[in-house]
Image (cartoon, rainbow, N blue to C red):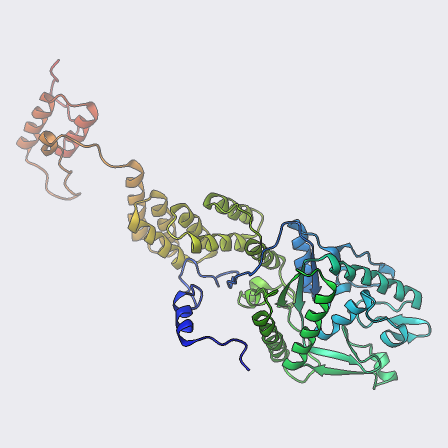
Length: 490
């Protein structure tokens, strides 16, 4: 069943009017996929500065929430205090949720819709020592009392959903471990020792599209019960790939299936529910050069890439009223100074898409492209500027690009034109004397006869011209000094 039905007329109309409906050329100055990929999207609602945002999902969600907090939003998940005596991993990852069906149970426990039962929902790995399989790897077996306390602390965080008007959910993967005792999906692989003791307790499920859509439907309906009535949901897919697969597939193939299922499952909710949005951070990361987007483990995302995605989300979801060209250029310069060069470049590209033709913006964007090594894009942008007006800075930037490209003859011409533009137009001379100020012959060309030069010298001495014009006239005639041998009348 199609998730959207569009008439033929509307389809062709959208194809014609959608500015981002085609792939951009590599040399397009506003290429939205250059450096940090920036696929566009149109929000249906706006965020308010300082608003409470509840984040759910994988380690990518943890990176997003820290950056949101730096931008002034209220992020309740950051308030969780973790007892490190029972947690050997990164404390911030204790709230990670990787599997879509494993999210809803934790919300039900938090709001008392179901009861957490340590006998059913925890695993005893040694006498009196338990682990919580709804937590990620990094746990240490703890006593029953410590496990219950930690679960209560986590539930207290989830109860902030009742006052969160925005819920940001990052979906992780579809290789899901199922607990046959509790009938629930869990968030981490079960310990090998438990598998050896009772192989029937757990099994691996590779979820399909229907499994994920049912889990999302359950989750969205549950959030409708516990969140404010006007809450909004932003869905995204984590770009962090599978670190390893439990199947016999190549990890890249298994990861492609996992992300494809998650991405496909999100679309019906965006199409059919007005309060649900999709934010394309997944596309942004995977369409960016891996050497730029990922750290050396090829799994986790570089901090500047995370910050870039949060920035572009905030730029579109928050009305700042502070988007003049001068301020955009200033913020791009600040990004570059802070080491976020790609973010600054994207800020300029976004502004250029809205304000094509602005000369200051064109120069700033061309500088950024030259720094990024995109000489073709910079050249196209600069040449386009010269079609409308001569500009010395544009000529200088072109000369720089030509020199870097080994096009030295073109560089010399560009620099000569730059100097000429900076000097400004020549002084206008009265028509009666214009014949005396004709251009000097080209180097190597024929010179005027001596008698013509002497006659011109005499005429110059007799004319009431300013010293600057005298020098120019004498130089035009080929004389060493316009007044040589001539006494000016007093």
